[in-house]
Image (tube, rainbow, N blue to C red; front, side):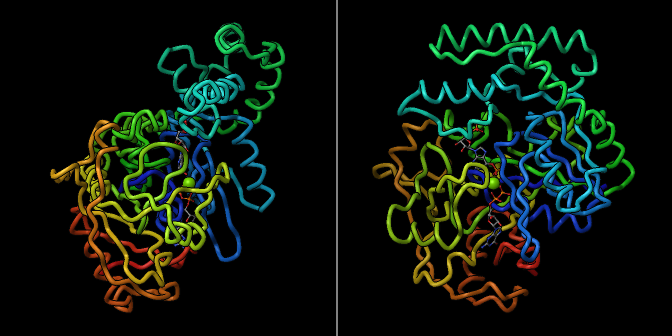
Length: 424
Ligand code: GDP
Ligand code: IMO
Ligand code: MG
């Protein structure tokens, strides 16, 4: 049995897609189980840069079955654009399957996402405005529309009509906006999209179960990251799904006994896009340098990512809450030519040392990082074996491993497929 879960262990954008792409060389199935097109996953193959939002990153391998599971919320227009872009690049999507149970992101979800953010004013979350939160709200409220609903004309139309009526009322009467939807127009537009998506529909829970049972190699591609988890993240500055490993079981429709490896992807530093607390955030030239060298601009929204030192309190929290069996540590090449690299080993609140990530944002705001300084390294982007890494970089990797309490098995030294080092 080979089922590996790959999740983000920080605030997203850790380079999950790069790890998925590398591991996909030997995988039979790649599964997305949560989030939607708020995700932006980059795979670099020589000079070609592929950006995925809903389609699993394994699609670049022609024989790999790529599954969008029941826990994902799908913008039909968005996924069709991705499919078309892939076709234009000569990449087949014949092996793509979309769960019949997945929820559809409707146009009013996107509108509601935007106007709620506006309404929040200075306390906005900084969402991607892709309608993710409102779509998951409808799912939890039991008024969402699923892919399988499209297969029954009456059911689909009735659900769209009911939703459009209620959403129009909320948009107008609660938020005072003039945006209003016409149910017939929405039905017509979405029918066109969904008709094109219909060939991809499947009961994906069966496909995943059978693949694992028949010893196929299955990868679960996490989206977002641990601290964006709606339960365990920096609530309310989080997304609306479960990016931790536990979310995979629900979002793919399998039991925990079917997973045997959980890999957490981290960067050698930390980034965050959107609002919310970030204890090790840098506001100085080093932060700028990391942003420039690491090209830290959002794949989905183009927003500048906030950058800061590696935070082992977060790393340890991710290992604990996701039962991580190993760590893939990306982007340590970005720290090249920084004389002294810092790692946050704990937080300090007054005289008190805090070793566990606090639940309350007010508590977190009182925490100052406690740093350890380590010697830096030079350009490592051409190194391909662990033994050739400078001793200072190896010491950094080992310190991350010790502090987070999980083995670092892969180290990223560049965005390309081959810029990855397996740790002996
Ligand atoms: P994801 O959302 O976790 O898949 O990550 P993103 O694709 O949003 O952001 C990660 C960025 O870092 C992408 O531009 C990757 O090409 C790039 N990247 C991944 N690993 C490395 C690495 O080890 N070094 C460098 N320099 N870039 C990397
Ligand atoms: P990947 O998969 C980084 C952030 C948004 C915002 C918060 C809520 O590429 O790592 P949402 O639109 O989900 O309601 O926004 O979550 N966010 C991400 N940040 N990487 C992502 O995905 C993200 N997906 C959502 O910026 O702060
Ligand atoms: Mg990303």
